[in-house]
Image 1 (tube, rainbow, N blue to C red):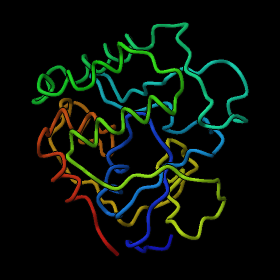
Image 2 (image 1 turned 120 degrees about the vertical axis):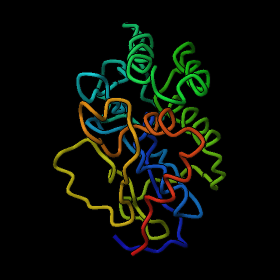
Image 3 (image 1 turned 90 degrees about the vertical axis):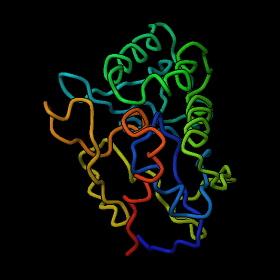
Image 4 (image 1 turned 90 degrees about the horizontal axis):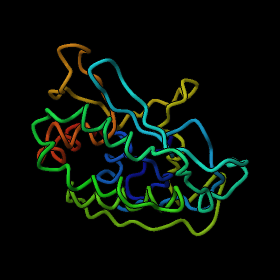
Length: 217
């Protein structure tokens, strides 16, 4: 990947994205959010990774049945047949209730599990802006204007941060460093979990941590 830190970076919206995702909001002057792609399953668009007493856990937002991969990302609707919101928030409370900054930040997130967004895109968008406020990041954010398979005006970071094991991309501008985690004595240090892990464990030092993880090559 070409490293040109004066260009905007193009990324997809994700559900409580990994720590690596937010380093791009520091590294690049502008972030373009992809709003013209077709939904792709298997990534972080509708899931996030946290860690609990037993192991890492993927929290997945269920989608309405249908051929989502043929739908525009703006049209993919969330299913509320099952009470996944309660399950997600209970899982987050169980995982981070003893984290140093959980009580301070819990109210910043609990509302997402009480209100219902119709589409995945809108849910991820409001979550993103809340996290950026917490991190005090004021990066210039713009929606994409059209779909480009191989953009020339942007650094294409779509699908680079993924749950797919087949994704062999190595991000030379991100090096996770150690911070204390709730279940570290049991699991060891687990890098690049959801940003929730960092915020609940590091609190106001989360932004400084992100800056330390950035390398320029």
